[in-house]
Amino acid sequence: MGSDLVVRFAGEGGQGQVTAAEGLAQAAAQVGYHVQTFATYPSQIEGGPTWAQTRVSTNVILTQGDQLDVLVALNRQAYETHIGELREGGVLIYNSKDFDEQLGGLSIGLDVDSLARATGNPRAANIIMIGAVAQLASMPADYFRQFIEARFRRGRANDQEIIDGNIKALNVGFEEAAASGYRVNPLDPPPLIERQRVLVKGNDFLSLGAIAAGLDIFIGYPISPATTILTFMEGNLNGEGKFVGQATSEIESIAAIVGAGYAGRKAMTSTAGPGLSLMGEGLGLAWMAEIPCVVCDVQRGGPATGLPTKTEQSDLLTALNPGHGDMRIPIIAPGSVEECFQAGVDALNWAERYQGPVILLTEMSVAERNEDVPRPDPSLVVAESRIVSDGSMGNRRYSGDGLAPFPVPGGPGAYVANASEHDEPGDTTHLPQVHIMQTERRFAKLKLLDNGSYEAEHTESPIALMPWGGSKGAGRAAYQMLRNAGVDLGWMYTMYLNPLPAALLKELRRKELVIVPELNYLGQFAGVLRGLGVNAHSITQYTGLPFKEQFLVERVREEIAARSGRLARV
Image (spheres, rainbow, N blue to C red):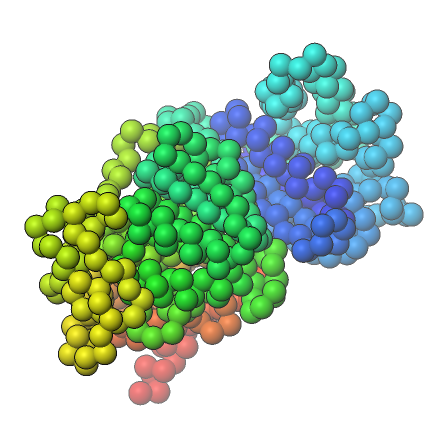
């Protein structure tokens, strides 16, 4: 018996790989297993090399898995690309319609399209694949019959016919795999569920968090991989005073939410790197005029169009200062699907608390993957609201050395929301002493946000591993492997990147070395940490894919060995 199953479905876009991977995950999660999916595909509408992966486990899952137990290769290119990641003893299922010869090893040839047509349901090829995988892992057919029943029972006249057809396809997959006589390590029974869990994607969970925090207005423009935030909001942000709109450009999106924030509403948009670039001037306006709003940037490969459907962590420097001049935008970067809900809550709260723009920095690998997470209780969410002017300060909106009450138009405290440098009432001025005073008060407000939570383990170690964003899972897995091997290594992590929690920054400055895994060429977060007085060195990767656990283990060992060598030479 085993605790883990990793399956990859690979082929040409449109062959059902993503549907199969997500169906396997849904069926396994429904009976109590932990699951995580990952998919990668080209940017064209259909076709091109596509693969999707599902990991099923009796333990909480940190990464999508380094090696495959089962590879489903739907064409020869997929076989040649991915066969090297199939572990010894793993099983290959290949499309016998595309392959003209038998393959060695533990391999099963299936013409899934013909088998699907033979069941009378030509669209059920992905169900056949799921059935074959389930048989190889000795997962009971009842798990998947329950899944099919739940998925296709929708109150339609022909529901039972659809359910029966898919169960027939499932049985075909079981029978074809059983005939081979092959097995992978059978999965242990699912763990007992102590708290209700839900299977959800990162973009959806983030959106739910923002809604729970009282989001009023969402304006978005479709751009991969952020579009599903817009579509989720269209279906779920509703009720009195709520509004969702699709803009004609990212410039219109940022202008609209700045306007909504000025009117006293909680407002948000979503975009990716190219759109964030277009929003720079609007974010500068929100910073200067001190207007609350949230921009969710779902990072993808760049620059320019770059790799629009791949994952990367290369927008950090742009997010910190998205426009010209002196600004430093607050950033929250969730590291897992589970963290996305709280990140959505906190981004809205931060914007309200310090009265300015906040960037919620996520990435494709977190946004698009399914993960089972504890079901949140919206009644426990603490939703903050800005301090609103009661008129006691007159029109001195920008007074003092920090936060001042926010005058909502139509209420007490008339002022000018001015993008030019301005005095206390908001009137334009070019006086040097006023520019100094207002610049310092805008930055001083960031201190209201420096109490975010963080993780710290084995803080006595002189070396710490500190990933950020979606590299958290692989970083954590590597850290646990290294600690189990006796390596003296500490752990530091937070999703509150700017400002960093003050106590965490103090700890980091004491370290002899902080190792930062990140998916970019420049080592962006390590550079930011060095600017804050931390001796940080990055482990970089820029393939468009997430880190693998073993890769990070080897690279961290190299960094530690290099440090030891440097000390010896000194």
